[in-house]
Image: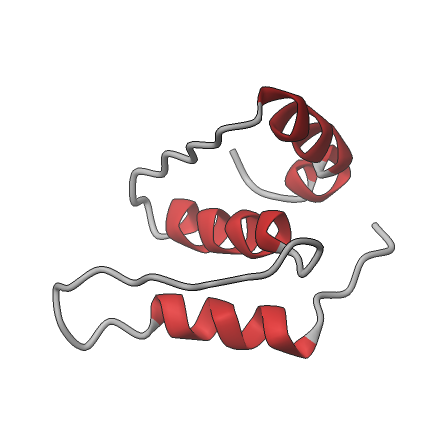
Length: 79
């Protein structure tokens, strides 16, 4: 697959997964810092836990680009 998440992306993922309360989470991630990677990792973990996952974006062009780029990653996952 050729992509290894950066430490900041893993920390962001851990912050999102750290649910000590039923409150939501909000992260500020700068342009180019890997929001799509963070979302893909989070969606994968939640889906493997049989949780429902919806990803919403304001840019269909970037959504298509990122989904296509991650096809090799998603092919490794069970259906």
